[in-house]
Length: 152
Image (cartoon, one colour):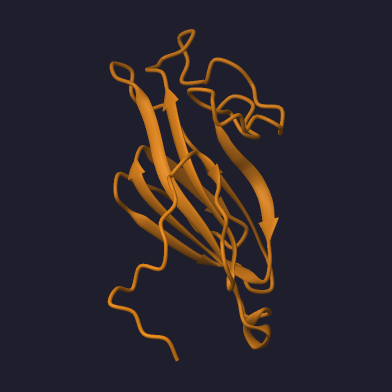
């Protein structure tokens, strides 16, 4: 057994988009979007619709899969947990088992998908006199085989 004087194994630069992850992680991503202040065209909508391929890490912001509001509309998860740790901005969450809420600016949300849940995460442009910047990490943790079908 190897011992170390520190618990930090390695560091990598943080950039928007997916990061390399070791087991047991499925996925880890850092989101950094510099959405403009609203209202855009007298609404709280983003300036252009996403097309499902809007993940350019060099753009100042991305719509992802959102059409009027940036984010990830209703989509399924199964067999893992998601941990969303916000730094800046707001996330609106709603799911198929009746949970819904708004969190952000340092909040953490933990969701166990287990045997399956459909949920959405959207990034509302709520500020009309200042930018609507969003920064957060999301980690997807693979559940052990015995827990993959737990209730969400």
